[in-house]
Image 1: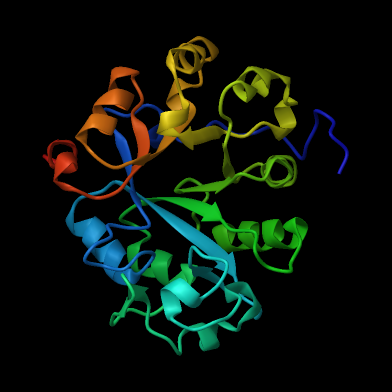
Image 2: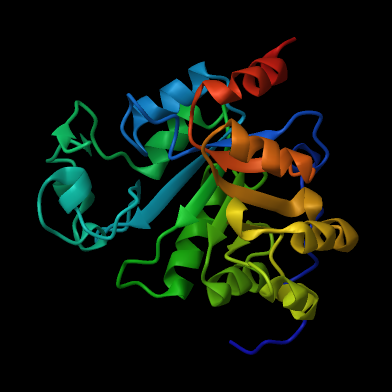
Length: 268
């Protein structure tokens, strides 16, 4: 890949429901977890019941080319059996129950197709692409674009990765995909403007504790504040910190501290 400023056509404007919002865009971290296990259909159902407008999910691609929801590289913690998740067929993954706190649950690993089929009208999806498979970034990007097109999801999915070449390739080759580059922490954010426009991600994200007053000021002065996503907020103190800086898009662990925001956003 040659880093030139071109691409395969102009990047369309981002959907207004992602940028110009009247309420915070809160992504339920791996779904609304506890008591539901992470990245499960139950966690998505609970996020819907809690009125989250968005969910953050981890995705991988299986040996037989299914996108599936799963965070870890190996299956030890979540399935209780040794193995490399992306080197297994999806049917093999489904032979095991998802574990939570070391105990098996009734939940099974699900495909991304199942998730969007059952919940596609309920959420904006933040898909954290785990590049654990043996497939290269070109193959993964092509399959992602095909998937989003087949399910008409271009305006409801943010594809995220900490791999700069991956997000750059998506921007260059598949400009309809909305991208997010993770890990643009201080002081690397000052180099963001040097990324050629044809490769520049639509959103950026960092751990919320990595930002400071200088970073917050840069977000505002550069116009990136509406395109910044903080992760992972866990309590009311952390929530107050990012809200003080005007951050209104964030990935959060579920909890009562979010009740006010979720209920007010859902109110007619």
